Image 1: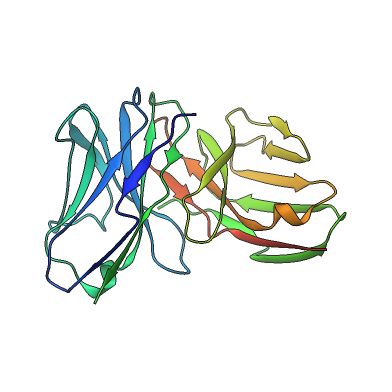
Image 2: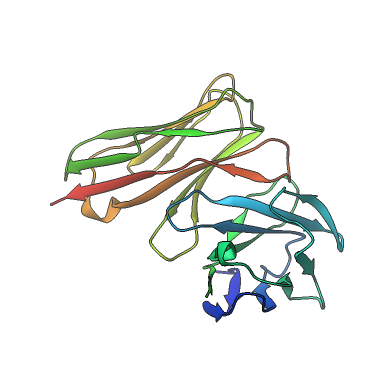
Length: 113
Length: 111
C-alpha cells in the first residue's frame, strides 16, 4: 500500500542552525501539507502546497520557514534559523485531489538544543 | 479560527465495554476525519465523514457526522486492548483546505 515517507526520523540541531525536513508524498498525489505537533499538544497546520506554490499558510509559518518541491517526488520543509520552540514532531501529509483524505507520514522529531 | 473540542480527554475502560467519544465545534465543516495516533508516530486515517447525518461502520467502530456537520462521534463496541490509543478528529473547512485537529481522546482499554 502506498505511503508517505519522511526523513530523517529524528533530527537534533543547535539553535540558529538551518534544518531541512524531507517528505516523499504518495506518488500520484497533488496536494501536500506540513503540520507540527509540540509534545503533549495538538496537531497544528503549517502550510499547504499545490501546483508548485503555497496555497495556504498559518500564522506559525513565518519568514523562517519555506517549502519546496525540488523534483517530482520530494517535498521539503526548511527552517532557516531554528529556535528552541521549533522542537516538535513535523508531519507531512498528501492527498490526491482537493476532496480526498489526507494521509500522514510517520513524522520527523526535531529537537533544537 | 475554527476549534474542535474532543471529550472526554482521557477514558479508561475494561475490555468488552462500549464507549463513545465526541468531537464538537461551533463551526460547520465540509468533512470530518477520524485518526488514530500511536506515541511517536503519525496520525493514521480511520474514516472520513462528509454528509450531515452520515453513519459509517468499520468493524466495531461506528462513526457519525452530525446533521449540521458541526459535530461527530466515534462509538466502539466491545472494546479490546488493541483499541488503546489516541483518537483524533480533524475537520476540513473546505475541500483541500487545512485540517483543524482536536486535542484528542486518550483511550486505555484494560484487560
